[in-house]
Length: 528
Image (cartoon, rainbow, N blue to C red; front, side, top):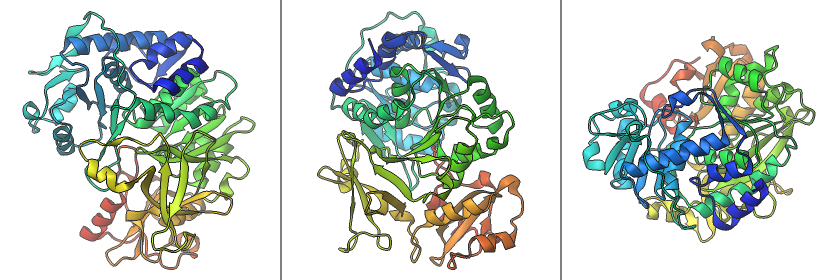
């Protein structure tokens, strides 16, 4: 089977992650998969696998889950310590026709308890460490059974004890029924559970399949995104079907990242925007850890032009580019654009891109007040295509409030230029009276002050825009440099400096702006 044939099959029959490893092995079973950590569920297999071995492990785990009592159509919540085996376990759950519910390991016990109740008597697939964390959650009441992938606990079924279970035939879920459930970032409260079907997952591969076609050689793809995220489904699917060697990364410390990049020399890097910001300093490393990178890609949030420029200048590849995709869990990839070495530093960070080729999402901007959306009067950004998530699990009404026929309201505000470029200015809930775009302020000031490691503009107690800053190594802020950098934004309040570790973040490292604003109101900070 060729990768293109498998891809065409997915477009017709949908993407079933339980079948994907087997399909990829049929394309090229010798394609390497390398990890920067050990698998908790199979600690003995080491960090170097092939796609064929990967598929074999998924089949093995599917057999063990069946032996543990999991059956087709059941919902299986996977909440475990961050590890690449999460995606392997998810594929195994899918392989027996059950519905995967991915929960981030960053969620606290109380939130997990709420989501378990919402999912309504699921099987919980977890590990000893997380079970200890959930000690106060009434799992016996909220779940059908508890299975551990590592670390035995009383009352839980251990996957390790089910080794050698008879293999079972794969089950293909209906193309428009729930297959994988992920959750939103939870920036405004309890996360919503986003339902993906085989059809919606398959459709989302379309624009990204074309992006990967830019890589003519079978070079390494480094993936550093949360293993629980819907983006991981697309990233793994595309890399494996394209026969690219994969480097699956969990560690984010720049020193660890540098060692991995120097050893494996990836040509394509996909990572969270905030991870890429954390790695900026590696651009100065004389070993050139980014030297081999042809394409940087990020899809979770808009990224600052200064970060893109530093990364691109650290590449030794001719024509290196940074491809940014704007989207969200509910819509997948919506628009995109490429940035290049010579111009990224001059880019308008609010321009998140253009509609992608035929078969991809459609975009529109709808007026908020009856007036035509513009830079001064942004409108609601909406997306339509077959890749939209089907619903919010157990919250259909909440989903329906954002859905208008074919169109999904993203919650972001912006406008389109006469050339068709979509400019995303802010989340609607984060808008500050009298401020055109807090994100634009952050782009500009971060581009001017290299000593800042993070800048977040939030609404203060008196509706004023308050810049919350973090500096490299928590060094004191140079007030003169700050005043010069923000001279174009006279309404800004004096900056508040906090350690970067104290920024409230989501599982995808987005800053929880509303939580940060509440902190300023409840616990006034000293000005920087």
